Image (tube, rainbow, N blue to C red; front, side, top):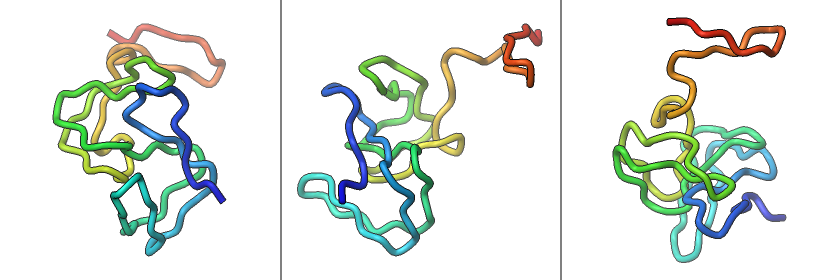
Amino acid sequence: MLSAIRLFPTDNVMVLTRSLEAGETIELGDIRRTLQNPIGLGHKIAACAISTGEKILKYGAPIGSATAPIEPGEHIHLHNMKSDYLPTFTLDEGREFHHTA
């Protein structure tokens, strides 16, 4: 079963099509990575090495920037990326954007 898909050819992330458990090995071309922690369905993993400050590309568009070096197959989430779009806005429970600054 396919574990991850690249949504757009220029994306540097892949999206998991199923949850992966710690100890599972994923393959990205000639790169093999054994996961140290579980990663949930729909989360992102790096399709290639990503440098600190480099844009994270999903759907062919930048969705944020790396805050630390990211290795191929590594989980991409709040611990190693930041949004470039919502630094002063939040989404409340009513699903409306509100300025917080």
